[in-house]
Each structure stands twice: as C-alpha cells, then as structure tokens.
Image (cartoon, rainbow, N blue to C red):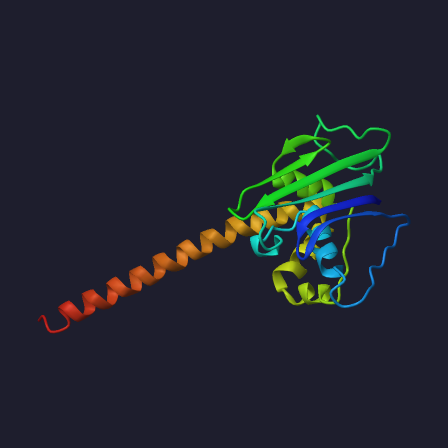
Length: 189
C-alpha cells in the first residue's frame, strides 16, 4: 500500500509531497492543478519507461520517491529487506536518457525495480482500458495466469514455430531452384 509520494520536476510541478491512506485513492481537481503530473509520477514509480519530455521545463532531472507498506509475501531481491514492513523506493531520470532506480537505498536495475514495485501499485486512468486493445497485452495477461505449465508450452511452441519457419524457407528455396533448373533445361533435347 502506498503511504507517501514525493515528486520533483515532473510535468508542471516543482515539487510535491503527498501522504496517502487507504487501499483506494482517487485524485481529483481543477484543470491544471497537477493531477496528470501526479499520475505520471505514479507511473514512473511503478516502472513505466521514463520520458524526458515529462521533466519540468528548464530542469535536467526529475525524481520520484515513494514509501510503501510492503506485504511479507512480496518477492524482493535477497539483499533488499523492508524495514518494519516499509519499502522505500526512488527513481531519478534525466533529459540525457540516463536514470537510476533504488530499492531501500540500493541501486538496482530498472527491471528488478519494476518487478518489485509493479506488484504494489495499480493505476487506473481514463485511458488505461486502451491497453486492453493491444493483442500482445491481452495474450500476456492471459498467459500470466498459466504459471509454469503455460510457460513450458509457450517455449515448446516457440521452438516448433521457429523450426517450421526454417522449413518453409527451405521449401521456398527448393521450389525457386526447381523453377530455375526447369527454365534452364526446358529447351534442351
């Protein structure tokens, strides 16, 4: 559960800090109040790819920090231990495309960060349902419920499909060579 969120240089915000409580949070406000900047910060802390154009104009770097109450069942890297059930996360990104991600103050790869924090945060925005129109996204959602059995079937299917493509290429090459040979020797008698 997200307990605190701090943003710096995201969208139109210089800085903002929010303390939250409850499992369901709704962000409302007037146009231009910074709702979208808060949502972007939540997306970044959830592991979404950072976009330099969302860094505040005139600044070179943006930062998002969050404090989560962390369930004991959450899978974290071995060297990351929540303190008193709290997980502190931080993400910094810059206009030059470089970024840093931290769990409990330790620098970690973005993929590790995304896997860990992504399980703690779900964002539903007015356009989030559009992701469901992406067939790859739909397949990923369905396949994720199959566990190891589906993963093994996918792997087997991938091997068979790759082999079938190779055989199809071989067949086309043989047919092409056959046509060349027939054309070359068609008038030979």
